Each structure stands twice: as structure tokens, then as C-alpha cells.
Image 1 (cartoon, one colour):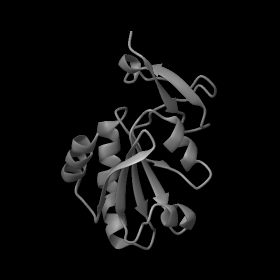
Image 2 (tube, helix red, strand yellow; image 1 turned 180 degrees about the vertical axis):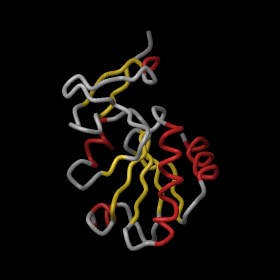
Image 3 (cartoon, helix red, strand yellow; image 1 turned 120 degrees about the vertical axis):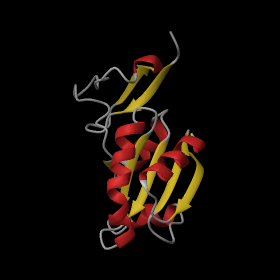
Length: 144
């Protein structure tokens, strides 16, 4: 058996230890019993973001966006499609920069959409501008 991975629950933010070979087996949270993976992007705010960034062993793919941004809205279906295909190898999250300006400032978001990949809490890749699902998935797979 391999070393367990820490996975933060998308519902209650509890940290769960899951054997890596069991990630795709419909893993459930030990605290709330909800599924650890829903195949959909997770909306995070300034309160929840640090826990998912710092306590999870999964790569975190963050879409910094705003509701008024046309390219952000156009890319949203592609981001959702990629979340369905890439989980549980990575957690895809969305951060609304209008509601979470502190996070946008902390990570130097100057244009949106901006996508950032974090591994072990450190930024490993960044790109700005909307992408189609295929390009987005390829970019993520190369970075993680």
C-alpha cells in the first residue's frame, strides 16, 4: 500500500487521509460522509482557500475570475468539463476576484481569467486568458 494522500473535503473542509490507489473509488469524507470528489469546480473564498492550498496533497488548479468578465464566463463550461475529467488527480477551484480581492492581490492577479496551478502549496504554473477544454486539460497535465 502506498503512502496516503491528504485530501480536503469540498463540503466541510475536513482533512482526510486517502490511499492514492483508492482516490478514484468514490472516496468519502470521514467527517461529513460526503463524496470527496464531485467532478465539478469548487468555489473557494478567502476563508477556505488557505486550508485547501496548504493541507491537501492534490495539485490545486485555480481559476481567478469575475462575473462581469466575458472571457471568464465563456471559459466556465470548459473548466467544468476538465474538472469532470481530471479529478481526482487534481482539485479544480474557482476564486471570484470581486468577492475575494485579498486573494487576488496576494497572488498578483492583474488580468482575468488567470489560471494558477499550485503543488505542495507552491505555484508551479500560471497562464492568463481563456482556453478551450482541450488546451486547458493539456496545460494542466503538463504542469502536474
